[in-house]
Length: 390
Image (cartoon, rainbow, N blue to C red):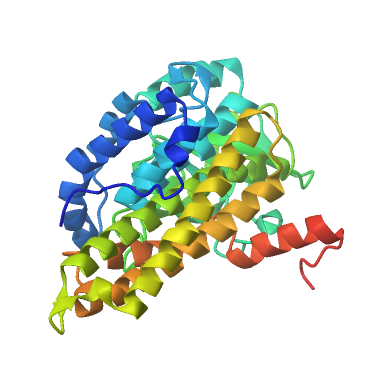
């Protein structure tokens, strides 16, 4: 198959700044040269190319929208385009960068002390340190407020007990941003460093989705952390939810990248695959599938672009992020399924990237808020009535 040709049916290119296009193209070229040649072997092995983290740091993708501390200070649109291109490679690649940026660097930057910022952010921006985000628990996913993990102050330390599950980057992280309840029943954030006694990780195996990604369980058993490792400027569920909005924003863009990859591959395959003496792209039903894909991708691109512009203007609302995440991931999953259908039997083997994207998107559809949860978030916003738990 030819090199990725790009998907821009409505000349959205003209709505991007020169800097935004340059950043997108740099990441696109990097994914083509560095990641795509190795993703199949890592997908088969169920491993993540850890050696590429430092190279991503050199690209400037970690904490790209943050200002200072060695971060690039880019626009939110530029960051979105980075996420789009990383997920065009693989959801696991975007996930690693999204967690590092939106779920670890963002809370340290927004809620952390100056000492915490100076210690962690420059090293994380360079890819020298890796972080993970500990919110989801075995019994509490969509309802994070019910978490069981506890942090109790004992003298000059906090003692953390509990378990976190489905944690991207968990076993390779140098620091975990962990959310726990104190005795006042309020939720606070803590920085738990690798090697702290009582802190252990266990990787989750047997995944059919996000195989080229590290997913772990975090366990805390009388884990003592210094008082200065608590994030001082946040209290309550707004802390982790603010982080999730950052991650959801990147996911909305990333899903478009996965859909673009599937569409481009299916289009080229349909133009080259000969059946009944002519390319299958000449058949009406195949064209119908391709037309649906390009139309939905185009709509999702505009949804992301306006969301990014609103974010850059400081006018974005969490419910708008929910709409983009909900819509774009469902669109990408449907696109991947149609692409797999166009490829026929060839669609189930990893010689073609479509089945890998399709399986990955099953996870993306679930994490950082399921499709149903985002539906209820938007429903509450437009009606003023809360349907959660009913």
